[in-house]
Length: 411
Ligand code: PLP
Image (cartoon, rainbow, N blue to C red; front, side):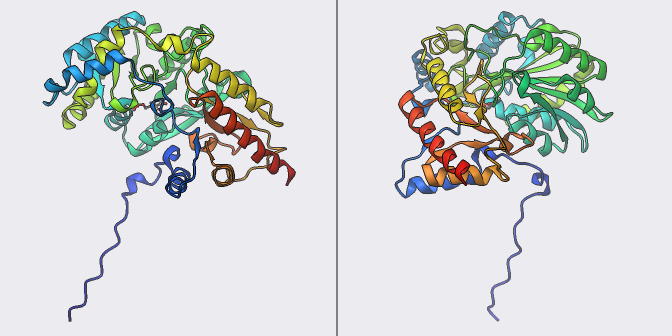
């Protein structure tokens, strides 16, 4: 009589059926378990600069501390006025015309805003063009919003630039928008102005919204210059994303923003939807917002890190050199960001399941990377390697990868 009722199994929502985010997936869970067992793992898997001794600029840390006593209340849903004003000035510096304070929404990192931008836009079955490889949150956010990600290929042979013909081929009557990640994660590619103009022409012809994720726009090597796609057109709706996580090494502050530019007249309804979603989450982390004005207006210490002898440049060069010395490994040298996306020649490394492959690398050599298919790359022949660790750790880690790959070839 006192038999307990059988509990119904609790299943995740079918909304998550096609949602996938592998960067923090099962292999990372295994790495955590190994660390709990006392093993030391070299992590080349996450673009989080702080654990590798890349500190946020002291002046922004001080600003957050100084403002903490005033940061315990909610802010405006779109963000603090001073922060948005500083972002507005930054968009002017980047040549983006016609942006007012009202066109800016501050969020808990770019991540929150990507999800919001997709939730506000998509009806079931709407399609969004997303690059392959991509930063996988974009694909996941489109799927979560009920949309269908359509991946356009970036061409490794052309320095990982988007293949315009493939973009054209993937457009259907349901295509609503195109996502551009420039500078790119995971490839480190930087897109030339001419290519951006051609992408705009395609967007114009097919009335697509352009979503530009430019979170690495100051992490630039070899003196290259970044062009914001929004600075090249004022006749389309363009939503540009940026934040403090990478340019200012302050991922943990969860401070990012989106800027709406171009012709907003025909997008009133969408923008209302976006504002409503911003109000539903009340506001973004207020202490993190206090860092924005000082970050954007202060000393740009990122320039020291990416100078020819700067720490990030040295690490990029070393990691690239060591990886490409391994037989069958080739890699486009990144012009920006903090990642390498090497290719493993399938003739030497006939990998069928790249997640299993990186799990074996972890178990055998205690080095953690992310499999290329985790970035929606269609074939199991790439890895993403973060070059944030110090030179000694990179040398050790890539040495271990090299040993592992030697054994794979021998089999
Ligand atoms: N967009 C890209 C291309 C990224 O690489 C990342 C983080 O790695 C993000 C967005 C998320 O950044 P945030 O910390 O602002 O949420």
